Image (cartoon, rainbow, N blue to C red; front, side, top):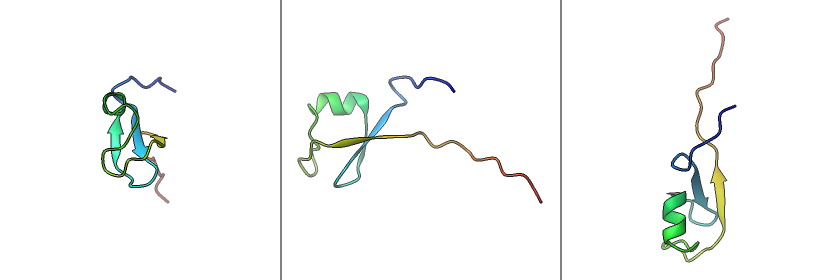
Amino acid sequence: MKRLTREQIRYRCFFCGKVYTSEEVEAMRGFCPNCGNNVFVKVRPQQPKIVKAR
């Protein structure tokens, strides 16, 4: 499994659900501008799922 670069890592606000990059979270000093929350959850990147035909 590949390591994610800093630009690929995303964080989601726990309360309002808005998604930010790691640079945006650092610039906001860890507080969401929408709701004032300081709890962020790391979001996994969406990867296509391969399904075999029947």
